[in-house]
Image 1 (cartoon, protein in one colour):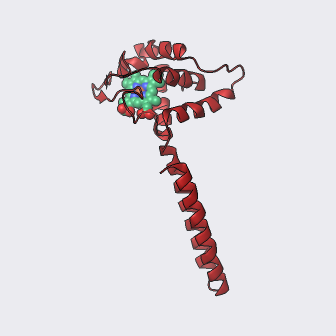
Image 2 (tube, helix red, strand yellow):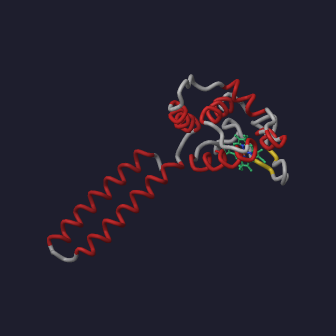
Image 3 (cartoon, rainbow, N blue to C red):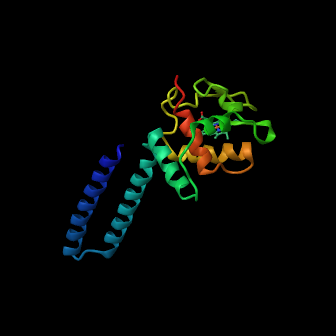
Length: 169
Ligand code: HEC
């Protein structure tokens, strides 16, 4: 759901809630009803907000990483060239990102250990890539730990995504 639609929906639900709450208080019915209703409202708003994490574009994901990187002193922007060498270099355990996502990020990848197929890594070749912040975070954490024995820095993540965005089909 696009963000502005969600926002409208939340506002509508809130208006409806106010009306219902008013009615309820007019009747001096029960504080319990109101409490339960308010809780329900909070939960609905939260799940809608959480849902917005799914509707990103790779450029928006890059912008979010940039906000994170900008907090680092000396940050001077992302470099696709650094991203490419980061992607290709073998790090610890003789593993690099390209070990599974292959030398050509636009091609289908193959898991270095299990042999399982991995859909292409570059957004140009796979429109699902970098469109879900939660998935992006989860796999950055997991794969960076496998390859570097630590999490990637915001600079590394941004450089990598900047590089992937330059890759054509
Ligand atoms: C051992 C194999 C392996 C290695 C090495 C690996 N990955 Fe992955 N990666 C995967 C698998 C499996 C997935 C999840 C399946 C999928 O999304 O197709 C994935 C998915 C991702 C995603 C999710 C992207 C999205 O939005 O769909 C990111 C980000 C990612 N990897 C980053 C990296 C980075 C950065 C490195 C190098 C530091 C790396 N990976 C190295 C196997 C690997």
